[in-house]
Length: 185
Image 1 (cartoon, helix red, strand yellow):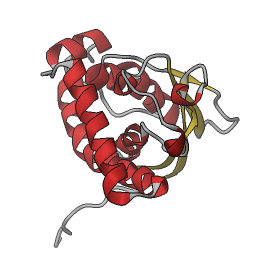
Image 2: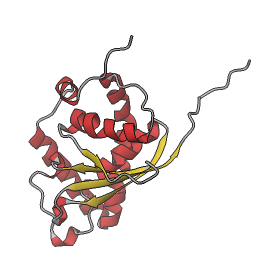
Image 3: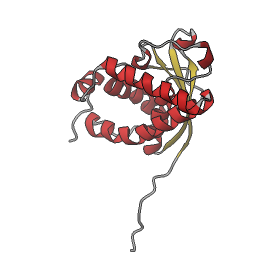
């Protein structure tokens, strides 16, 4: 019998961590450097998303190896695992899954707390910046590795005066698993 899935707190305790302030300040310095190098806020948003996607494609392996989570039966269960275990394991926070559409293919992940934004204030020149776009890319990349093509967009952002951080996650399609070689039977 496989080991039981771990709780979010047990996962968080089992992962190597860096100092939260160091992580937050390093992320802020990276975003600032991207703004300097790319100059266009929209290009920075795209780059943060792509960086997150690349991280997500690798992070999912660590998550699956350490969490003992078995294959989710549907998108709703997947969203719940991300909110309760994924965010807890890697960021030390949990999210709330809400606002499901009738088909069960689109929901919101709401974060009350976001460690990426400690010490952050957006200047007026950066109002179009999706500062946490790295997170949406991570989710998109991780889900693609488990055969789910998704679209992830920010709906609310406390850096813009909203009351929470809300990402909208929409399942575009289930991607059939591809195998690297064919059997010659």
